[in-house]
Length: 227
Image 1 (cartoon, rainbow, N blue to C red):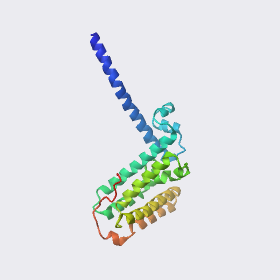
Image 2 (image 1 turned 30 degrees about the vertical axis):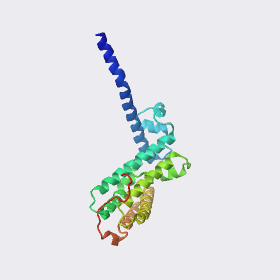
Image 3 (image 1 turned 30 degrees about the horizontal axis):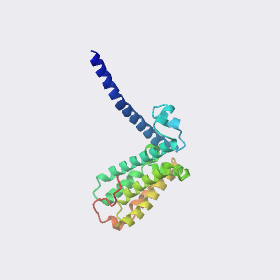
Image 4 (image 1 turned 135 degrees about the horizontal axis):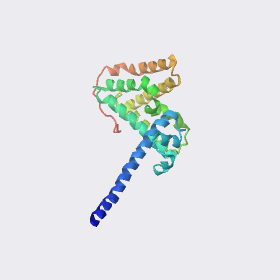
């Protein structure tokens, strides 16, 4: 009987760290997801208290997961870009050629849903202005830049232009158009100008370089960047 009690107690002791680690990771993930949404909705001014409340946790537990709000902002930014990369990957996964894959990214981005669902959509349009105001040494700047490079590479991979350099230049130009159009469309939401901006950007991007689009080529990866 006594041996059984000791054995049971030993099992509980061994299991406790495993349970604690799982709970810690669960809570950290909840904070990360809540911050990725709130920072896109409210900007980096969203408070730690707001984030913890949205995650269903108390403010006092924050520093058990993150050393500072700066660290949290960087992780939230990375999470938001990972979500965008995953969406872009899904859009091009079934495309038969580069033209179709390119169109899928453009059309999937310039949608009414992306315009209004700020908290779950493009971090480029939602966070760029706030990140630009941060000091050069803040970790969120590096994270934003890495996320941006990932999406630039994804768009360059489906550009009809031949050659990596030409594809990157085209992708940079198109991404600037996409993000600029989304920022302006959100700022004018509720006015016909908002739809005009998105329609003009869509038409410009989908009709660009028609001669290149007439030659359908299979989708392939020009870069080694992860999706």
